[in-house]
Length: 234
Ligand SMILES: CC(C)(COP(=O)(O)OP(=O)(O)OC[C@H]1O[C@@H](n2cnc3c(N)ncnc32)[C@H](O)[C@@H]1OP(=O)(O)O)[C@@H](O)C(=O)NCCC(=O)NCCS
Image (tube, rainbow, N blue to C red; front, side, top):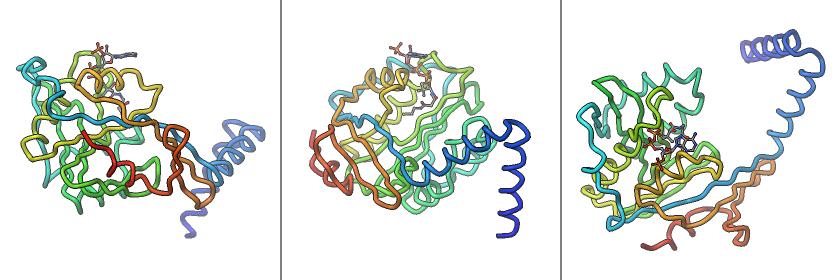
């Protein structure tokens, strides 16, 4: 507790010296608003086996992919190393649910070096944007994060990895694969569209203090996302 207060005072001091009194007030108001209210909107997609991209079309001898469902430590160390630049790569709560439910992380390599990953959840997935875990129906899998290092983007590496991950999940009996993408994320929309994903709904998440709810396609109000996931059929 004492250490926490000291680091908070340190952060306030740094903000004041870097941005002045106005900067400090702006930061304080942003922090307060975030404590009271948050909202985010994403498009939810599914893919089904008959519409998957053909992974053969996208293969390359330089690329490798490994599906990790037990020991993910090497990839997690890599994520932690890159986290200062990309803060969303690693969340402890996400990891503890991934460990508990044997999530699969696809490790993507280029000439043997890790250049990205895909995180796939099943059963229960902690969604950081919602600050809560979501339960998925049986035989459904959820691609909840896809990442390629900036220097390697635009070469269809993610396309190759998503296609291979789809094929792997089909073999394991997952007939519905979900992903969610924010509407501004054009590279990701193109990537998953090319790999056969089709839009199911636009989901707005809202949190006011501790009250959380979802609005589906601006019409359907729900406290949980599960009724929507369960009602979605191929
Ligand atoms: C999304 C991401 C994984 C794509 O990786 P990638 O290896 O570059 O993907 P690909 O090369 O297979 O395909 C990307 C598509 O986006 C397009 N694209 C790339 N950069 C773009 C840009 N700045 N604006 C619009 N489209 C772009 C490519 O042309 C390609 O589309 P096409 O098949 O129609 O030509 C990568 O950009 C990334 O890690 N982004 C940050 C994390 C992120 O947003 N993850 C997704 C969360 S849902």
